[in-house]
Amino acid sequence: MHDNPRHEVQHTWAEIARAEDHTDDPDLTRSLIFFRAHMALPSRLASRRVLTWLTRFEELARFVREQDRMPRSGTGDELEHRLHSFARYQRRNQSDLCRYQQELLECLPHFDWSPLDSAWDQNLERYECFIAVANRRPSRRSPDEQEQRLAIWLRNQLDRQRHGTLPHHRVLDLRRVERAIKP
Image 1 (cartoon, one colour):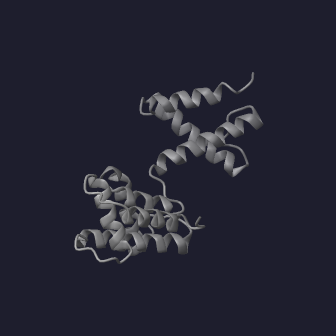
Image 2: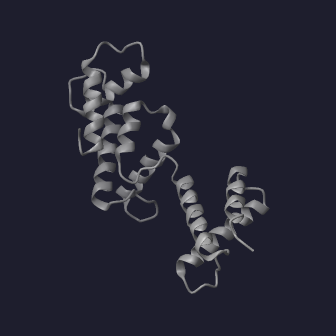
Image 3: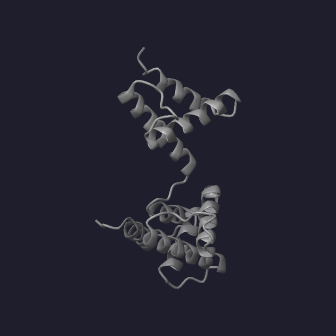
């Protein structure tokens, strides 16, 4: 129906808002408060906290749209640092967010609830592809920079495994991939 996922979310919530009373569902009630405040609809229930969250979200959305990435820490830019902290806080407190807030965040390109897990999964996929092509582990001494990075990532994971800090499901993932190496 809509090309923009954010417009789709807003359209869906407009339909929900037009429907019957939702006071029996606290999350739905809270979502509608956020939705109405976001659409600048009159709502006596929109607190300063709701309006502040929506302002921060809009700043984050603008940053992502202009930079084509999520904000990072340590860049020296105060706004970017604040937006990075906001996004990190949202991820850490996902269970405290209402559905409308979660859906808005999920519409942002590059937003990920678990960016470290996603990065790990991407590296595992790269490792799996490397083994499928080269039939060996990557080497840190390779002239190829991508292979060097992959070798360093793998070494870090094997060190974590040896020290018992790599989660068991990750150990199993690495073992599964390594079984593909043919003698």
